Length: 544
Ligand code: OOB
Image 1 (tube, rainbow, N blue to C red):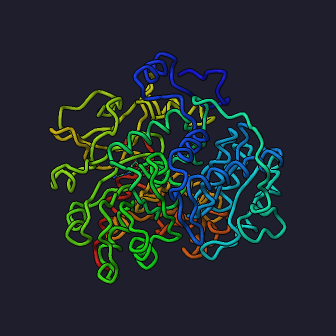
Image 2 (cartoon, protein in one colour; image 1 turned 60 degrees about the vertical axis):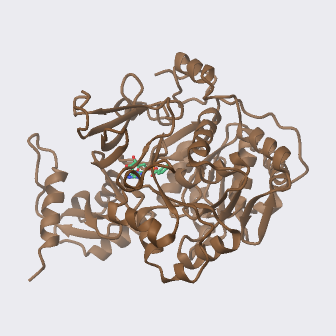
Image 3 (cartoon, helix red, strand yellow; image 1 turned 135 degrees about the horizontal axis):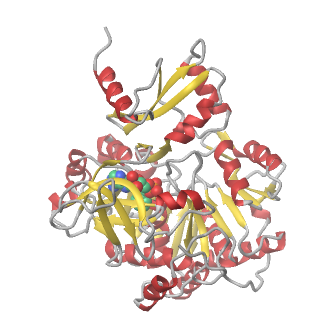
């Protein structure tokens, strides 16, 4: 693995021979995000790029706003390669902020609105962020207090920028100023950090370059057939890789279409937007798909403009998949992707059974896939194994994580996805399970070790193991199995403790069980498989 000097320190990159090949084959075309928006403003200036709240910005307006905001960031002292933690909900300003940072070569770190002091404090400290961008309030939570706390603990953090009422911080609205000439980044530079769902004690940061991410947009736009006529509804959190780039809002910009922001993915918010804006495509996780399928509101709104519903982030059951077309009157596209890179899509003209029963195939002919056993030996055709992947938009390593990278990547640069898959004779992937120590809570990823570490900080917890338990709605929920030290604390006290430590609420265990000892594997490690099996059994046995 090489770390070229011209790159941000701590960001592994592609070996030179691969980079050359990806350029020569035309996957990487030397584009940057700042220039991309400039080009769209030139070609589609008067068309609407972005709709949200009371805003309706054309490409030309968005481009001009981005120039002004970038100049303001520069005047504040933000410079190329500075890290800026961005935690905004689905508002148009999200893109104004990130494109302003892209244009000046500063690097957004994409936090989710659900993140709290534990995660944000870590992102700010680990990336040595100079600024943190928040809404004043969202979802009943006041982010200004969180920012106060994080700022006090992070010496590098100079600016807190608030969308709305700034309180003691700086109003985002006060930053923009007359545009100045700024030197932009190179296409091979890191553009931003995505977050890994992860399986380790702390979330890992994913460095994505302009070259590689813009290629992923172009490939997605091609497979999903986006055009200037596309109207994309962003209903999932904008910071997540799926609604950002698969093809998401950035893919929509790539195609010159219109992106519509929904502050909330529930049918009462999303359906009126689909009707009003004539939305043609949107993306959901499986539990939300069930909510949409079961909503009585589907009959009350004209959803006829919707051509494609993309579903991904977690396994969609074949039964739910089969209901999409008859119930919502649109096509289904399954999307099996990851913030580290690889994205698989079912194709729009695939036969219905293929769309309903598989998670699609890689979007690029340059994606290399291996399905292997525990010893990295390829399994027999059609067999289930670990998915490894390498390609022009899959990272070669996490940010500043040298030791972990030697485990998460093979020596020849394949990313170990942690997913168990099989390939059908047609070359489609079916996700059969997961080998990584993670709970996929309906698309929200919970790293077991992260929650375990927080539980272990409680004085009455001697040991803790966090595992998935099956759930009809979310697919999986989290169960923390705890060996108490002395008298067991109440589950609610333990959860209150985790909240007080600033853990995002989707990581708070759905259930807590107390045991005297953990089942062990042959080598004396906790057997999570045995724990899951015994929990499954006890949960399916009705209590007397
Ligand atoms: C997407 O990205 P992440 O980084 O939040 O999570 C990636 C992981 C995958 O490794 C897999 O374990 C799971 O999420 N996953 C799926 C899935 N899509 C993702 N498991 C089963 N079926 C699916 N369709 O989740 C993501 C990124 C871009 C596009 C779509 C999803």
